[in-house]
Every structure is written in structure tokens, then in C-alpha cells.
Image (cartoon, rainbow, N blue to C red; front, side, top):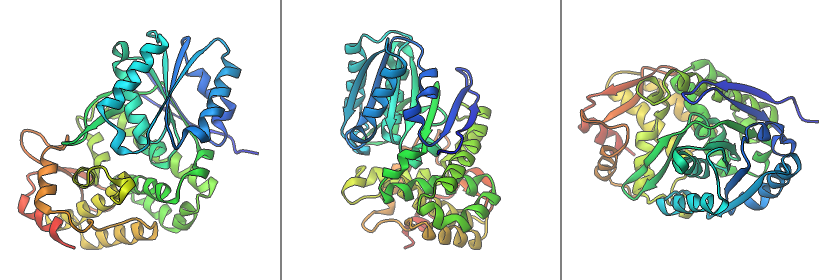
Length: 369
């Protein structure tokens, strides 16, 4: 018997939308079909997720909405596939389906699928509904919520995209049972981020629950998802287009994205996956905060211990040049005309947007091993 689903509501410029959190939500389908308005639905997923969850999602839609015309697009997995070419496949699949302006695109998968499919939905007929059905912890607690959609370029991550909030998020926590341990750990990096920038008490909760989170215990995991989504929902409602406080959610990402880009998005072939890169990036941000005198070294040490207990990396992979990483950061979306902008902290739970950090200090932190 599954526990009762949890629900949060997120305000957005396109209207409020629900986040449903619980086990068995895809098979049940009630929340899913409530978010599908028209006669067309395109399911976009990847080759890892499709064998596991596409049949049950498709069957649920056909059972509850027999009038629905359903198309599917199965893409290769991995960050390296989050490209304009794959985006083109998604919009061409919408064209083949004959999708009208009240069609719904259903993004079934992790952050790559959510970002790419969401961007396709943002562009088709200038914007159709997208329902996010995240199947990774990272996507449940971060990328599926808030409406940031994008694809990557060789020059950098997420450089082509749009703000396009979903019509619903269906976080079926039972899908985490098939998540590889590495991907579960990567998602925990984003969970830690919320405590690091918003609420030290959340880190106080994560620390004694680290083993349970690593084991994927359902009750603890569902609470982590709900609390993380609540933090994100609150900041997204205040700042839907990332003109202020929402940038705090990028704690660790300026460094992390530079690492991912410099490694050629090679998480599947020896590089860091996104959550791992964010874990390293958070450590670099914490060390830089100490270097500029904003926070104590003790806070950075505490973060390093926590990430280590969650079996996440905390050091830059060998072979990456600090100067090359700095060049990548200059093209990051968080940079502007005045130069690099970092998300640092004044201590645990006190994230800050900081400009005018001397590049010499940044290189010094990058060079430390």
C-alpha cells in the first residue's frame, strides 16, 4: 500500500501548476490525465527509460483517455544528446502527430529529457503544455520544477532555451527503484544545495539521514523531494525569470557547468555527470567564499564531509586546466556585461549573489587540489 501522495502548488506567469509526489502515480494516472487538455500527446523519453516506464505510461493514457492520439519519441540517453538536432527531432515528431495548440508534450525521463522536451514544447506553435514526469532524483528536486528549458552547444550548457513552466509535475518516486546508484547520488547533490543556500536546518536533517537517502528509503526520499521542491517553488514564484533571488539556485553550477563543458559532457564515458559536477562546484564556491572572507573554512569543511558521506566527489578531476575552466565560466549564462557573477555563501544556509570577485582568487581556488 502506497503512502498518500503529496502535493505542492507553484505560481508561475502561465498560471499555478501542481507538483504531485508519491509512489505509483504513473500507473494510477489521475494526476497525469488531469494535466492533458487536448486530443494530442507526444511522449518524449530516452532509450534507458523507455523499456521501464513507457509501456505503463502509454497504457495509462489509453485507459483513461481513449480519445487521445498518442505519439512517442525515444532519444538516445545522455547529456551529449541535449542538442539542437535532437530538439529538431522532437518538433518534427509534433508535426508528424499533427499536434494542435492544445496538445501536450509529456517529458518522461531525467533532466536531459525534461530540458529538451520542455524547450520543444516552448517553441511548438509558440508554446504548448508540457507535463514533466521526472524519473531521476535530480530531475524531481530541481530541473522539472520552474520552467527552465534548454539545449546545449559545444560552447556551453543550456545556452539555447526558454522559460516555459510545466502544466504539472508528476514525481513518481517508485521510478527511483530502478535508478542506478550513481544517478541517485548525483540527485542528492541538488538536495544538499537547498540546505546550503536556504536553510541550515535542512542540512541538519540531511546529515543523520545520509545513509537512508543513499539506500533510497521511500519515506525519507519522499520527504527530501517534497522539501526540496518547496524551497524551489518558493523562489521560482518570487522570481520566475531569474532576475534576482532565483539565481541562488545556481550555487555550484557556474563551476560545475564549466567542468561538464570542458569534459565534453562525457559523464557516460569517464567524466562527471551533472550532479557530481555540481557537488564539486559547490565545494569550489564554498572555498571561494572563504577565500574572499565571506564565510568560514569550517563551513566549507562541513559541506565536504556531508558530500563525502553521500559518496559524491569534491575535487576537480585531474587534467582540467584552471585557465580553460575560467574561460568556460566567462560564457556561462550567469555572467553579464559587468563580468563573472558567482553564487557564494555567507555560511551554511546563507546564499548570496556576488560580483567583482578577483579572477586571480578564482584561479587560485581552481588550481588547489
